[in-house]
Length: 64
Length: 338
Image (cartoon, rainbow over the protein chains, first blue to last red):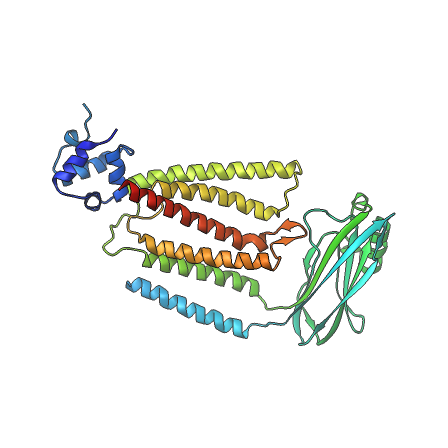
């Protein structure tokens, strides 16, 4: 399932996939895969993304 | 270029100079000859029964003799005996075999003519008689009586006298390995982007690598099992066993690399892809060039069998080209998706 919340949060900071990838220390393809729903990140990576985008885990990764 | 890159470049240049100097001072006196003979065995008698090949050594020194009438398929039903003598009749090398690839121990040779005398032995009796005349009992091997049978075989006898340099093979192997390691180290250092992150692969790439290695291992195992079954069932494949084993490894490698590239887990995060593409292109062109020249010189097939030595460069060239093609297709796919 696509993670549109992550994509929207990233866009709100006017960040490209590469910018976010550089900040959390992963490759651009990994951010792309998370946004497309092709890869489920570990909790450590989720936390790193949340910190960079100033969001909580629930806001970005919780599926209601 | 980083300091590390400069250091490796200097070491590589120094190494190339050292190799060039060694090649200049290395001995180069090798003499060889080839004779093609159709040998017919009828009622246990081989024809032609005897033939000779002379070789002249122009410089005295330490040499080894090499006798080669090796074949993996269509094994002849007779045995060939070879004796190498000098002009005075002194025997230097004495060997027999139905199919053979053999080197003598190094020995001192004077300048002069050496004669390679062959004798074809179409029956066990002829073999025993020959062995009794030319070998001591302790040196004499035995050949099963069932080995001998009538038929006609196109034989290729290659002989050579090679100047011997102690440890030359080991030095050559070590030199080649060191050169390869230095070259790869240089490309790795040059391909690192500046301000690269400390981590080389991220968690998704590590997970994808596990999957790729698993599929590669399964593919290689299936290929090897198929090969072993084919060999056990004596299914004739016109290629040397070593080459077939190498192809099994390459099939596993191709599956691994394809998965890695497709899942963006081949290149490290800090890697400069164009640098690697240039490196692979050079390797492809180099290997394909050597491979094509081997085809032109008819070195790829010997006795109707694809040889490992003759086809290795071509196969490596095709493998490198395949990796390049996968990288390019993946790049085009990514560009279209972006």
